[in-house]
Image (tube, rainbow, N blue to C red; front, top):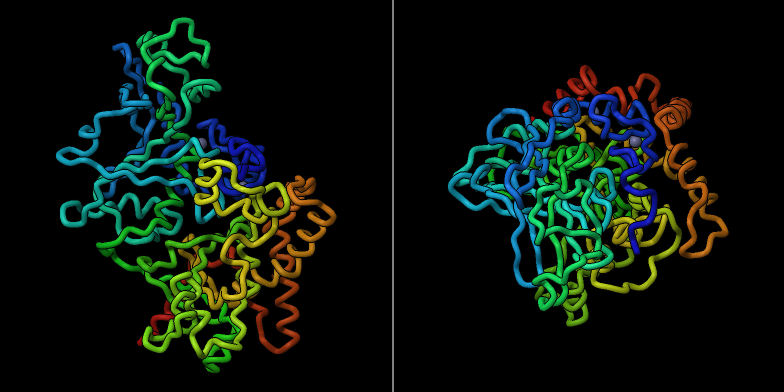
Amino acid sequence: MAAQGLDLKETCIMCPRRGTKVCLTCKDARYCSKECQKSDWKNHKILCASFKDPRPESTKPGLDFRRGLLFRCGNEPPLFVWVETWRAKDVGLTFETFDDKVYFPGFRPERIFAEHNNIQARDMVADEHEKLIFYCSDDNTRDSPNLAIKRFTRGDTCGRCFQGPWLLMHQWSGPLTPPMKLGRQHIADDYDESLELDGGNREEEDEWEDEGDQNLEEYRDVDMRDVRSAADFFTTEYRGGGTMDQNAVIGAAINSPGAIALDNTKSKWSYSVFRDSDEIFHCEGSGIANLLGIPVLLRQVSSTSAPELGELSFQEFSDILDGRGCARAPERIGQDFRNPEAANLMRDMVSTTVGALPSIGSYADMAMLEKVHIGQNGFGTPHGSWDDDEVDTILVARADGLPLTREHLEVLCCYISQRVKPRLAKAVKGLSPGAAVPDREALLNSITRADFLDFFEEMKRKKDSEGEQWGSMPSPYEMQGEWAARLNRLISEQAK
Ligand SMILES: [Zn+2]
Ligand SMILES: [Zn+2]
């Protein structure tokens, strides 16, 4: 099973550390530290006070209310809504439904499922039974831009433009018969008797007995963790069509040795400028950078394009079909396209065990593997496609919209290789595959802003002594205001 680790409910809503502090107002959002609470505040403050609004009384049997999160079209802030639901049945399935015309008058909304939080490099939901569902219209020929969604992201940056109203619901689905899981909210007392679920302890055999396996789909109340997930989703979800006012975001690149060999004007660390509609925001994030409060998104780019089809041998053609095409581009042969810094940024901080997962036992496990980026190779290892020889050049941008300088990217990567990697090696030393990592929490707690800033000062002194004049450079935590303005001026002058 891939879902290792601390129960999601016990973790900080911003990172995989233990969430020991609970917001005093909503009594729902958990944080590991003041720093994580501060990072969430821009979004949290809009909804925190209204979280405890009393659940409406259901007056009719069979009806219930579930908390959803609504982004009305336009520029008004999002708000919680109590969505009136009822149960319906189909062959083999009991499901909960609601009248979508209340929120989407005149058309049927589409559904978008969200399970993975790219910025935090971990899952949004507890297990394969849960999903966040966005109901939306998102038709750029009909709907106007939803500015509230753009403003709800960390840095007013998002993967393109969202249109029309969006409603977030939290779904649970799974087997209805034992072992039955009850929702976070118990079913209303006045629920229709014939639909009541009682943990597989039904006295009377009801009308379901001939229908074979029964599955249940129901909604759960959206909570403050889901609110956080929605904000991160909007930054990284790619929605084609429609552009918005585009702010340039300054990011950086790590060029692979092979890329530098093919173009000798390149240096290892370079600047890159992104528009907020750029695909950089539809990318995977770095778990370690997220722990440091410098959330970044990474995009792999090939430094050479695949050759023309006419030039290919059959073997090369099959390689392209298998997704290895770029490796066979003639100019790439013999070059080194490894990018260990990129692999370091992608180390798994969420799993609690070491080693690859046991073989896939069920469809549910397989779906889990599709969905998650954690747990494939165990704690501390780079996940999936980031651990091979062809990572090549990567582009990096901060998910909070602040500028990322090439020097900051270099410090971040050096910090990981010089401070985090030795700690990781120590934490997993001697453990056999599948074993839990006893020092995992201590390791996560050692990756702090203070530790990073200490390393940054050390590196500045070293660079200064090498004549690179890093002395007055601000840290990644000081990139708002004047520094961001100066960098933006510099970039726009260069662009002329
Ligand atoms: Zn945290
Ligand atoms: Zn709160």
